[in-house]
Amino acid sequence: MNTVNFKKSLKRWLLVFRGIFICPEGKSKTLRFKIGEEYELHEFDLIPLGEVKSENSFAYEVYKHRSKEHNVYLFYNCDILSAYCFVNEEGKMMRFKAKKNLKKEEVEKIISSILKNKF
Image: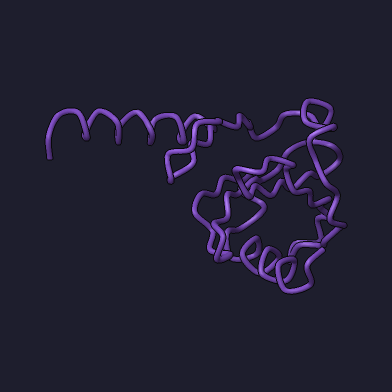
């Protein structure tokens, strides 16, 4: 692997680790989310999809970001961001970050039901 590709890959993963989405297809716009931030920061960019209960009885408000370049779903509990995920066009989860109380498998089930019901 040459040095340029390695640096690009490293930069992409460091940004994802810090909570910044960079679309895998290389699209230009970045979306910035941080677990624990308030709903008010993205309030006007979100489409409400409804409320879901997790296996541990936490209720989450689910939103889809209005971005036309990205399929991003956000999970808020008491107006605090608890999880977010990037989903590709086929419905497969590409990136995921959450608090410990919400598991990836649960989010995958919720996203698949949302995509089936076409909220």
